[in-house]
Length: 135
Image (cartoon, rainbow, N blue to C red):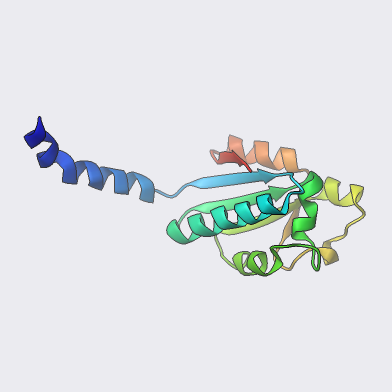
């Protein structure tokens, strides 16, 4: 058995690496006002976008998490502004949440997009084969 494992170990490692390099599409959902959660999603998406540059990542922000996308109020403003310049990453604010909080597009960090409804955006992405992560 040991010889079998040693003989096929390089093949197993190669297959694992190949499986991880296949491009993926992941939509993240964040609703928490907790700034540690904001830092966490930024760290996760930034790391994945660097490691998997052919993959696509979208963060849909709604509810109490909206301040993470606002100029002068976000604790991750600098990192988010940098990350939104990455072609395979997008941050989207929910238009319905923006209306509820009386926020307009000019208050968003440059590079942040707006979707009509966060939940519909997430469900649509899932129907298109995107993976889903609740932050």
